[in-house]
Image 1 (cartoon, rainbow, N blue to C red):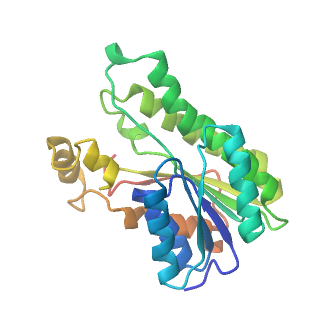
Image 2: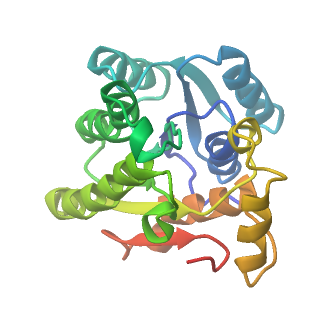
Length: 249
């Protein structure tokens, strides 16, 4: 499969979970992939090694998306490694569920700086590097914006912002042939959801029972949709929010 042949993709937060699987999926479809990471060099290097072992092209580049200087360097190093950019997957994100009583300034800014400001900074820089043929920006949102679970006010607010920004930027960037869509997973089994204690919990069992498909998601379920959004197969889609939650709404 080479529907992304000669394309260059940047995937933020790609050292594990959905980001890692998306990077692998884009590479399998023919793209050269930048595996961005903030702290886990080991995880990013593992993803790069996996891609290369299958004949793909990839490089790991460190950068905190919430810091403008890091983002500028990320794209400068991308250009040095592969030339321009055609695809940006804004996957980097953090979350912590807190009740209203537990909300603090620090936690609000921590989540918004990565999930919202980071997305704006990376997209801003990517647009400078997209060629005349435009590109595809895929923002990883979350089904929490429809489910609004208790204790998720900050996180759900950040992902609501992602949905809104995706719509706004689709209108701003359309004339440059740049498509912008939001891909919103439901619960997915990743290192993060294991660490947070969601996997094996009553919450996971409840969500699985609510899905017509009887399970929660796997990273590959999301990665394949990201590949579709990155390719010309979705050339008439922009400004859309795709909820990938196994039917849980």
